[in-house]
Image (cartoon, rainbow, N blue to C red; front, side, top):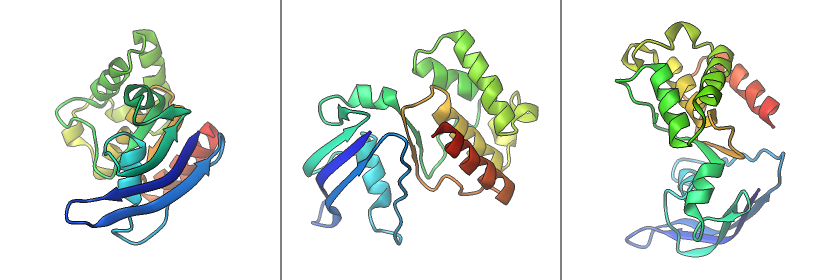
Length: 180
């Protein structure tokens, strides 16, 4: 599912954010990148999700080369970034619908996924409210749901439990195991 060989990313000024990273993640495996702030974890995720270029190496995600097939990689993945990607001036339902349409899903499929994800992440009561009225934890749950709307082959989570209470964290990890 993910194959990285000799990945190196150098920022302007010569700062090596990633230095010769190699790894392989097979289907059904879960990989966690651990390290202190500034270790390059987010940079690695940005490269793997086509949000950043790199200087050396080979990178494949879902069997697709991120350099040659970035659009196909983006269709195959879901990403929950450190900062929320939801629109605060839309409702939760509108955010999920928009994300599904960006993936060219059929309306009926989007609506079915909204029902499923809203139930799982306990968003039913808030689904038709503006996101500006959501708590931080509710925004995070919605952000995760938007990343899952299209049933991605590979899911990238960058500090996904940030802002979630203990019960919501446990639910998230249970859902990840279920997806796996």
